Length: 306
Image 1 (cartoon, rainbow, N blue to C red):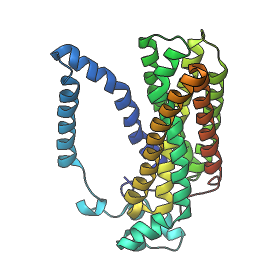
Image 2 (image 1 turned 90 degrees about the horizontal axis):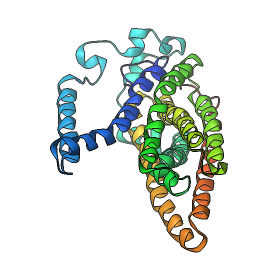
Image 3 (image 1 turned 45 degrees about the horizontal axis):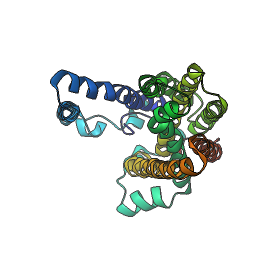
Image 4 (image 1 turned 30 degrees about the vertical axis):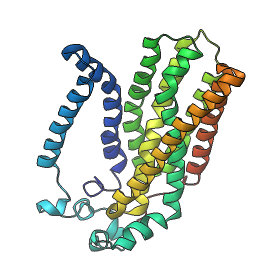
């Protein structure tokens, strides 16, 4: 996608693509449950998604194209008459193949901005998956939600992110590619929503659900914009390595919260009770949101490299 869309349209195009996470995440549970109910047997919760994935793989194999040049089209910068001329650079510079060292080290591992975005993504993933993975359990154990209403929290999170992901990606384009500024501002209502959840007593499930919707509304644009910012910094030739590294840090954050939160809940539930244990977990989530916001604030004025 970095090869097919220019810097002035990446925010919108990447954001449209990124909503696949939301649609897929919202449908996955219902698809698995429907497969079991229709065909009988828990195995079909794996068979049906697997078959659909095979159809998706076949479609991608048949239709996905590498670069514009691979099908006889000019580079996107030349086609769009975008930044190279104004910056005194040629399209050949942006299309030059990078060596292994340039690709992995110069553009990614030795780039402090990529590290900053990666660490911000680590804490953003803790914020994102804390309620996605643990939200239903928290609502049942602390807020008195039923199994069904607790599970609905996942749908609220996923569906809440679709429209703002596209809209705020477009806004970042209109602001000259200032992805970091938009992402940092998105973290503020997320921090506020977690604070409301922390201090809302049981019996106000509608308010908890509204806060989860707000979290989903703003966290998915953050995850999306971090990846686009990495492309703006690393260049389209290195976006695979940069996005992979940033994504790796994100999933390290998710694994850390799974193990860490589970250990905290086990330890503190026995010694101080479940309510106190969950309070500790929510404070850690809040701290993660604040750290991510502060790191993204350092990229406030960052624009595409060219």
